[in-house]
View (tube, each protein chain N blue to C red):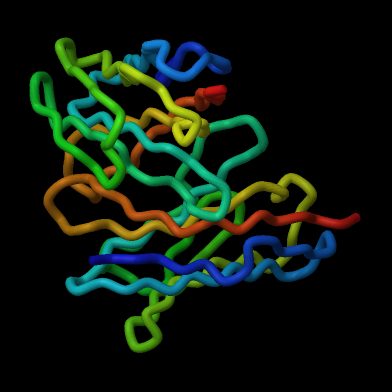
Length: 114
Length: 114
């Protein structure tokens, strides 16, 4: 069975500071990994995805994530936080190439302080 | 505008009173899915559909039914709702069931069962 662990349910950062959200996964097969963002009162939208090509993946809004197989991690970063980054972020892993099934982590809520 | 719509957005009901949450997409997507979101648990898949007349259980199907008679619609049915089904529900769709494709999420339906 696949699982996803997000370390820290809440993260507070100052505007302009580095954003680092941690995600570790377990998977019995090579994984496909995703980061989704949920803004208040909205559905989820895709930030970026890893599909076994480059290990450093760039997404929208200046976010990027690095796949590290040895650490089974897929941490999300952004060099400089903006007030508009306040949202909840979800890491997710696929259950295999057949069937679009996602297993989500518990989510990390980001608060950006001015 | 390409989108996934859900109705209603908010619903308060009583135990045992059958209800249906509708989901519709206008992108001609084959794959559709229902998730529930609970604090600290992320999103968990309830049911999914690979195409018309093809549905299957996700991780937490108990107490729910779905149907896929038309490509664009994927209603979620709670025949006898219970308080433990109080949650935030999301419908999602993607072009096919292959995991490489992004899932597009609706705005969510907040359900309270008293």
